[in-house]
Structure formats: structure tokens, C-alpha cells
Length: 243
Ligand code: UGA
Ligand code: MN
Image 1 (cartoon, rainbow, N blue to C red):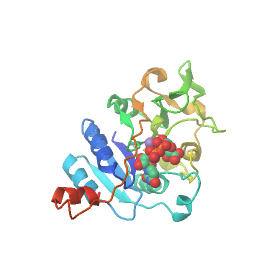
Image 2: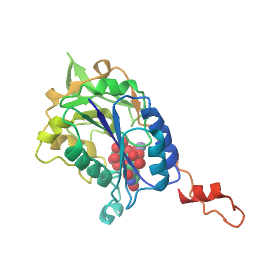
Image 3: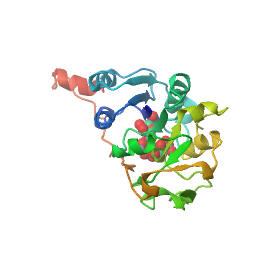
């Protein structure tokens, strides 16, 4: 089965670095289709060139977040672009395929892809370096999920991070109203609820959820400085400024 890896991203100084690192990791994996979904009105040229260079099957989308959500106190990040990718997978994805959301700043062990490749409904595994408990994981008893260990329960049915699950494309296509809500912190839970999933049907991966194969790493923000183009008349400096 092919794995549709959906990566939401947005323009800032770290974008090219994040996607270069992630994209080069993905080149080590067989049968991947990378959907890079920008939170932007247009596809960024440096990302288009990166995608061409990597040689992976890919789809490059651009879908900006509506202004009303940008003004919220807690902005729901990456929803408009993930929704666009979801629509793409529902229209074009193979039924035997698997969908996986992978944020641009996370770190992943390529063995995770072979864990998730057999997913039929929804599969789950732990995510490292996240929240107050340092790890977020389904709690497994006798091979079944019986609850969640997560530093931010927040009344969620599915207390998981975006990188902690994968979905069978055929299963997803059978559900009537698959969507992701514009509610910060509840994107995963809302999406999984829209799949009509019961906890007892979750497929347990990564050695009964004892093995951490993905980490919720975060990149420190770099200041956006305005370059003085009179003192930096180099083509390469201009490229950096465009990014
Ligand atoms: C956590 C979760 O891991 C995200 O999946 C979830 O969307 C987010 O919280 C949330 O609840 O809002 P976190 O590390 O806090 O992620 O957030 P970011 O890494 O800043 O953003 C998540 C993804 O959305 C990234 O791939 C980022 O590139 C993208 N994003 C961020 C946008 O597309 N637009 C933005 O304005 C900001
Ligand atoms: Mn992040």
C-alpha cells in the first residue's frame, strides 16, 4: 500500500530547512506520496524546486487559513491546508492506501512507515517529546487500547497528537462527513470522531505502543530581519530574502 504523508506548512524563515530535512527522510521510504499543503494563497517556488529535486511522488497544494481564524487567541494551525489534502486523498487516494499527518517540524524514524503500512481503520503508536508527560501514548492492555496517557486530556475522546495515528484510505472514504475542526488543540480529536471510530477498533502498532518512532520536536523561531540589499548584492542573499 502507498502511504499518503500530509505535511501542512507555512512561510517563515525555517520552512525550507524543515521541508528539506523531512523530505530527505522520506526519500528513504518506499511507496510514499508526499502531500505538501501550504497555508498560503500560492505554492512557494523554493518548495516546488525541492519537491522536483527529491524525486518522490508528490502533490503540492496551497490553501490559506481564513482570516477569521487567524485573529483567534489560539489559532488552529494547519487546518485549511490539511482539509485540502484530505479532499485530495478522498478524490485521488487508492483504497488500499494509508493517510498519515506529519507536521513539518517533527522527527520520524523511517521504521514507523512499515508499522503503519498495514493500517485498515485507524492505527496508533506513541509520540515522544510532547507535553507535560514527555510522551503521549495509547494505553494498551491485552493488545487493545483501553485509554490514553497524555498531558492534556482536555475532555478529548482521543487524547493523541497529529503524528500519533494513521488512517486507512478505504475506511475513511466510507465515512460520511470526514472533516477537521478549526479548534486549536482539538484538531486530532475532531478528525478522529468524524471517522466514527470506536476505541476498541484502534489498531495497535510499535510493539504494543512501547516503541517511540516519532517525536514532536519544535524548531526555535528565527527572527525575520529585513536585509539591506545595498550591502548584500548577492544572488544567494536575495534567494534567502524571498523565502
Ligand atoms: C501541535 C500539533 O502537533 C499540531 O498537529 C496541531 O495542529 C497544533 O498543535 C495545534 O493544535 O494547533 P505545534 O507544534 O504546537 O503542533 O504547532 P506547529 O508545529 O506550529 O503547527 C502544526 C503544523 O501546522 C505545522 O506543520 C506547521 O507548519 C503548520 N502551520 C502552522 C500552518 O500550516 N499554518 C500556521 O499558521 C502555523
Ligand atoms: Mn510543531
